[in-house]
Image: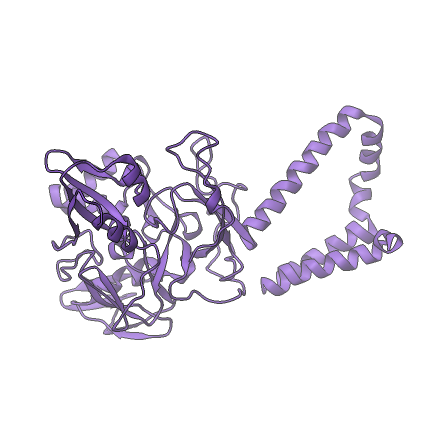
Length: 451
C-alpha cells in the first residue's frame, strides 16, 4: 500500500478523479477540465516545477532553517485559507444567532453549523472576494469586487426547501444598505424620509446625510427563520394564527407570542428564570403591575398557575401600517392579521393589475431584473405593455418562531430561491451573554439539532 500511495500515476489518478467529480461534474462546468493538465504537470511531467526552479527552492528549505520556517508558515496559511473557503462554499458554514426572532428554538448566542449540501451549494455571484470575509473587511472596506459577476447557479443538493424547515438565507431587502444605519432596512428609512419631507426632498436629504451602497445577493446579511410556506402555497394569518392552504398550521414546539401579564406583586427572579424569558425581552411597569414578555404555550399555562398572577393576555396587532408587506395602503394588513397571500412558483403565471402589482413589483424589478413602470393605467415590463407575468424562480415565506419579535416576510415579503444559503444541522456552541465565562456555556444545547 505504501508503494501504491508513493506511485505518481496513482496520486495523479486519485487527485484528477476527485477534481473532476467536484469541479466538473458537481459544478456542471466543462471549463474546469482545463485544470487537468495542471494536475498532470504537478504529479507527472514536472514542467512548471523545472520552470520555477522548484528543486532549488526545496534545497534552500533543507539548508536554511529560517527560509524553511517562513515557507512552512506560508504553505500552512495558504492551504488553510483554500481548504476553509472550499468548505464554506460547498459543504457547511458557521453562523451565530444575534437576535431573539427564533427563541426558544434557536437562542441568542447559538453557534450554528449550517449545511450547504442539503439544498445544494450556490456558486458565488462574486468569485473575486477575500477569503473568510463576508462583505466588509476589518478595516471597513469592501471585501469583494464586482468586476466579475456570475448569475445564480445552484449545484445538486440532497433535497429542496420543505415547509417548516429552518432556513438560513441572504436578507432580500439587503440589496441596498445605508452604512450609517445598517440595523435598519433601507426601504423603511426611505418611507420615513419621504413621508416626512416628501418624495423628492426626502431622497435628497438621504443622499446628503448617508452613504448608500448596493450589495449582490451572496454578500447580503444572513437571516435565519422558519419556512412556513413554499412556492405555490397560499397563506393567511388570522388573529395571530397561521393558516396554510386553508388549514391551521401546526405551531413549532417553542413558538412564542408577546403576552401582557398583570400581577398583584412582582414575580420572583426564580419564577422568571423558570419561564425562560431573556432579560432583554422582559419589560415591567411597576406602577401598573404589568409585565410584557414573549411566552410559549406551556409557559403560559405555568404562569396562569402562579397565585399572584391576575391575568394573562396575548398581544394582537390590529392597526395596519406601511411597514407591513407589501407596504401599500391597498393592503391594510398587520403582523397578526395578514393575507391571504399566494407564494409565487417558478413557471406560474399571474394576471397583473394595478391593484395586485404591489405584491409582485419587487419580484419583477429587484429579484428577476426587469424594468417596470406604470404609465397611466398601463403596466409596462421591459418597455412592453403587460397584463400578466410568469415567474422565473420559486419563492418562500419565512417567519420567526418568536412571532411578535421577528422582522420576517410579513415585513419585507418573499424570499427568492437564489437567496437560500442552507439549513442548520446542529448547534456546536451556545453562550449566554448575560453570564460570565464559563458559566455562560449552555451545555444542554451543544451538538443538538433543532426543528
